[in-house]
Image (cartoon, rainbow, N blue to C red; front, side, top):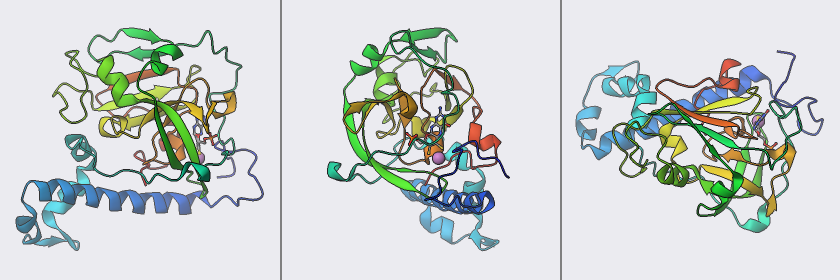
Length: 275
Ligand SMILES: Nc1nc2c(c(=O)[nH]1)N[C@H]1C(S)=C(S)[C@@H](COP(=O)(O)O)O[C@H]1N2
Ligand SMILES: [Mo]
């Protein structure tokens, strides 16, 4: 591919790795994390001994193959994600480069901005102001922003947990029950999609990733309100996933039964894009 919508122009200090190579690595990484998740879940059910006694299928114990095939469904079944992205001393935080401006083409008036959330049950759209998000418990974390291009940077973020938002405003369930990540109701939406106000950049997340304690609706970066280029007034930060999922300038959040469309997945990257 010769075009690079993620980051044009390509900075000379950071050679862009060929996409095929990045893609292959992303696939290897995601396969590894599926295995980890599958083992954790099955061991929890006490089936580990049974599992390893089963005949191999291409070098992988037979039931594990099924786990790999069912990875998406499996991750939804285990909302208790025990893995956390590493956190760092705040003094290590740096200003990230601006990377990716798709969906940020027009100027935006922060006072006029509203977060639109389409309820899973009702299908109706509810509006929120930035003050509504800032009224939720403020969570700060210093985590690594990793880009699929091969660079990463430590950033201090502040915002509200998406899980706190969805506990207070129960828009992710058909019944209107709060979305509790530790005891999720059966009618919880399996997927979340987010798009910029102009709908040019969009990401999809499985609900387990959306309710993960480090998945934040962020309004501050390194102690300052987000700048327009970094996604003001509100962006997604989800440090177990690559930067491509960290949608800047959230316009609408909606819930879905199938994987929502995802900008970089359409260009061939791994839909989950975890690391
Ligand atoms: N709206 C929008 N959000 C986006 C992108 C984009 O092109 N448009 N690029 C993503 C990518 S690839 C990365 S690495 C991060 C970079 O965030 P930063 O610009 O704050 O460093 O934003 C992500 N969010
Ligand atoms: Mo990126």
